[in-house]
Length: 134
Image 1 (cartoon, rainbow, N blue to C red):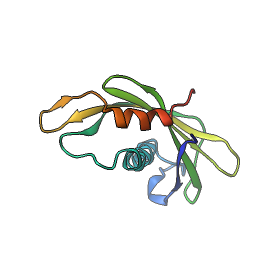
Image 2 (cartoon, rainbow, N blue to C red; image 1 turned 45 degrees about the horizontal axis):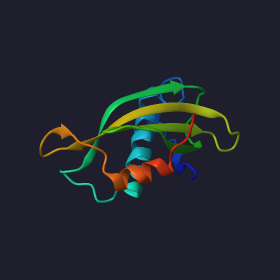
Image 3 (cartoon, rainbow, N blue to C red; image 1 turned 90 degrees about the vertical axis):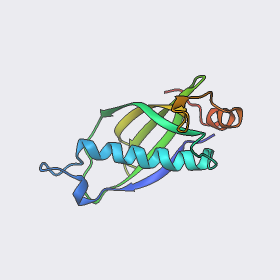
């Protein structure tokens, strides 16, 4: 299956004094992509089954600026018993240049019981549709 994709418009407020996208803004982009990805693969989440972010990293590859339109691709890198790793790649669609890459470890979580839970089979199947090697 192809990557899950969203478009990102870089707002002036997301830049820093040097005029390029601030490092913190990338995490907002990744969060938006994960949220939309999760809504697509698992719209039935509630307090007994949801996702919680355990770890996230970002590699800044090239600069981006206010007014640019970027594309954010999301894939699943690995699926474990209770967690899975999401891979994000932010690209400039005009040049194909990679702007940033991220790995986010996400855990299936029961908020009522405050504990991690096994990934339900129906969710695992959907996650595996997005498995890609990076």
